[in-house]
Structure formats: C-alpha cells, structure tokens
Length: 75
Image (cartoon, rainbow, N blue to C red):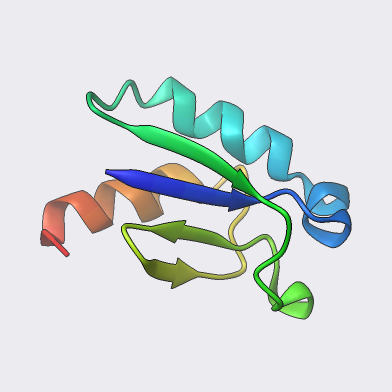
C-alpha cells in the first residue's frame, strides 16, 4: 500500500504532519508512506492519496477510519 500525504503550505497549516503520525500508528505492514508537495486541491485539504485514489478533507481525527475503510473495501 502506498499513501501519499500532501505537505504543501495549506495542508501543512491544516495539520498534515499530525495525519502522518496517525497513519504511522496504524502499523500497516508493507506501507510506503510518502509526502507530496501539492495535489492542487488546497481548498479541500488535507489531501491524501491511497494507492492512487485521492481523499480530501482528511483530518488527524478521521484519517484512521479512512485508511481502515479503504483496506476493508479492498479498493
């Protein structure tokens, strides 16, 4: 699984570093965690991409549920 998290100015100010920390807490095996400078959807940030699928309005509070749901649905 590859998760890219926007680390651009807007997403950074909204807490993208905390999102990174929450994803790390999940302890997913074979996870490739990457930062990205910008997904071009700043008004809908924090933005993350999981195996090529973009998710917007991610927060440190909801990121774990987003990732778990993605894994469960096998997308």
